[in-house]
Each structure stands twice: as C-alpha cells, then as structure tokens.
Image 1 (tube, rainbow, N blue to C red):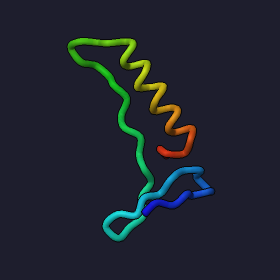
Image 2: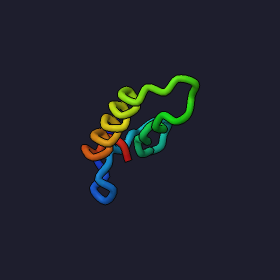
Image 3: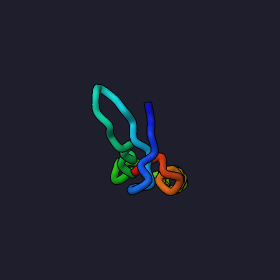
Image 4: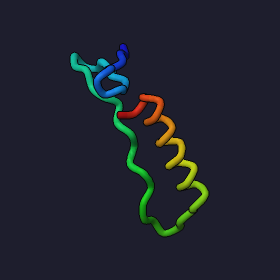
Length: 56
C-alpha cells in the first residue's frame, strides 16, 4: 500500500507493518569504466523521480 506525505511531498510505502519513505538509489561514482552519457541519464532520471515525489 502507498500513501502521499503532504508535509514531505513524497510517497510512503507500507511494508512489514511500518510506513517508510521510498529512498532514491545512490548515484553512480567511480568504477573502472566511466560512461558520462549513462551517468547523466541516470542522474536526470533520479532527479525527475524525486521532483515528482516518488523518491524522498
């Protein structure tokens, strides 16, 4: 089940008897091969999901 937290403007997810904010994944850093286009796309996707309230 999910609910919208107006105070934080973010979604809450009910799991295992408790409500929790959906956390954004860590953005890519380091690594042996660096793909700038892929990193930029992932960062833009994460920002858009956060702006729309899916990630807190």
